Length: 255
Image (cartoon, rainbow, N blue to C red; front, side, top):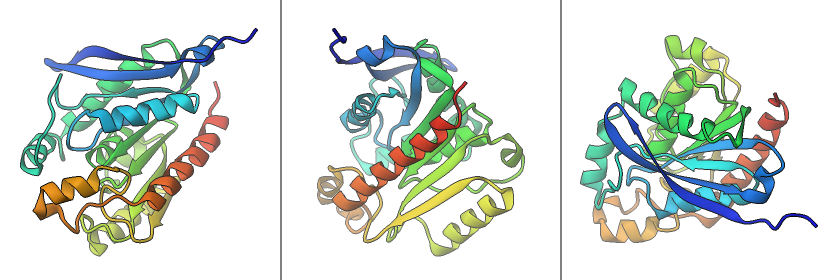
């Protein structure tokens, strides 16, 4: 009789550069019993490793991936308001530490022994979307990355030669966090680098469009009204776009 499928989740303690971190691993034990699976690294929003991103890891496990939601900030560190979140995320922006901290999470995923190292991707939300771009630009062994409403980091210098990943950018068409000039410069850099990328915009979608809690966050933080908001259609469509992207990159990257 076939083994009964069950989603296994557990916290994973690890460290990087002296920082004590706690990530979250999720996988289907029946599938892993049959061999190594594609792996997906998941990077949280600027709020930290909360239940929202852990839920995404479980969703990926149900699709048949081994998912590891990494911790960028430190064990148990979560932001309660935009000011605190900005301060936490600001420690990484534009600095090598962003890719280094993400690489530590990737090492944990690869170190499980459950993952086919030729079929690994990274996805990220908001701050996490920027992080997976930085990780790819640092030369991490990724088949692909997916940024959901992430900040856009133009490809330049050594990043052009180091990047091995195909890229999917899922962007809100009315996301006020990225100006038209920034968007144009970003796409120009990807074209000049000759990266294999897709840039998808979702009509009517603001920043944080995948997070069902975004509307409540906007209500609790008036400065974020009109800046963030949940879009059920953009959430659904971007997830389907990610699944199709994974089908393609993992089919062509088998070891």
